[in-house]
Image (cartoon, rainbow, N blue to C red):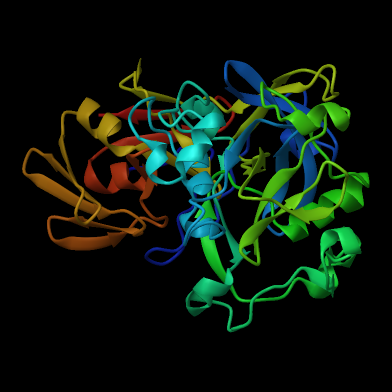
Length: 415
């Protein structure tokens, strides 16, 4: 009888639903579950320098990690219709992109003047030279609410039709005569953060007000130093601090946190301080003590696939999501002698071996084998442009034993 070994993965949910299996990881010197708010760690690099992140807060999405320093200075959007709409903004595209250098001309998304601050042909932030696939497996994609600008209220998904306003008071008159706009203080945010919003799913993102509020509660300081070559003339007057963009619209611009530790707005260009949520199941700490001087070194857990005892050599590594081990479909099935065909139009993948065929679709928890639909227990997932499936896809399609050993972090397949 086919089996998944001593450390059994239970696939019990209905078609397309998430499984509830628990993966028991090997012992580590320091577990990611033992991280303390305020701890520092490195993961990935930017401009050839390791990125130092900080465990900043906990919320419904898990452990919020934010870049300790501002990485660069870039425009938020195009200064036109998408100047402050996160979902279609330039900065969201770049932060979540893994394109190579010269593959995309970012100038099509921003105004010409922005070339003073950025390379229009720069590689995407998540390019493999910045983050290895193993490192990326430590980052958990999440779906979050983001406030809508006034010209996009028709896209609201939360039943609210009025825009969020950060303005507490408007004093009329010219600035030289005392005229000014006063925004709410950070501590007031939970009482007023209300407005039309839509959902977006991101791997890396800019903070919103509630995330900043949680950071403020933990540290009483929401400023960020300018680092990694990012610079503006104002930095020399602020002891190295620089303002950074939030993903929330305010009027015709977007919100920011100023170098003076308060809530503000920017003028379409500001510091970029990325954030992400930690994939605790797939992350591990390799070394370090978690201090600013000696940050932890973090990476994804290394899962090895053994087919007939031989290690699978592939650029795409297995990952753990919601307690489920997912493996790259093409790499595994081709190693087992199958033909694998990807259909970009309907985001599907077909596997043919001997006289059997299997059909799977991205975001669907089913597999059709020789015309019969069966439940995988977890949806097929697209990771780094590769289709991944749970181990049950191998078992259901082939007369094969699949053994997952969580202690050794190995998947053993006997063909």
